[in-house]
Image (cartoon, rainbow, N blue to C red; front, side, top):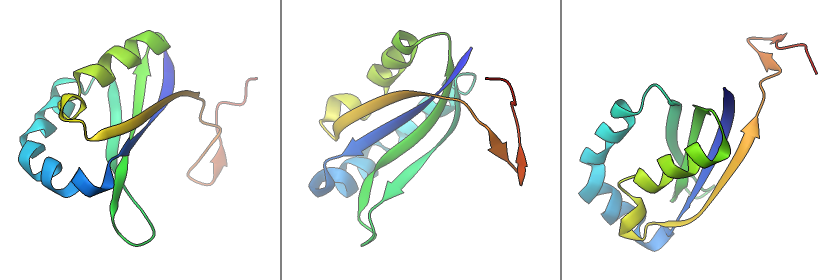
Amino acid sequence: MTLFAVLLEDEVSRAEDVRRQYMPAIEFLGRNASAIRAAGPLRRADGAPAGGLWLVEAADHEQVENLVREDPFWPTGLRLSVRVLAWRQVFADGMRVGAKG
C-alpha cells in the first residue's frame, strides 16, 4: 500500500454555502476510514476556505481517484482541482522514520 496526499482546491466564492449544505457528507470520511487516514480543511492566509487535504492509503493512484469521485462535494462543483501525489513519510515526532530508499 502507498500513502497519497490529496490536495483539494475549492471554489472560494461557493465554499461556505456548499460546505454548510453538505456537511452531513462528513459521514463519507467515516465510511472510508480504512483508506482516508486523515482529512481536514485548508484555509488561505486571510482565513477564507481554500479546500482540503486528505492522506489516503491505497494500492494505486487509480484507487485514490475513484475515492475522490465518490466525495459528496465532487458533484456540487465546489472542487476546482484535485492533485493526487504519492507520499512517503521520513520524519515524525522529532525523528527520522522509514529510513529505506
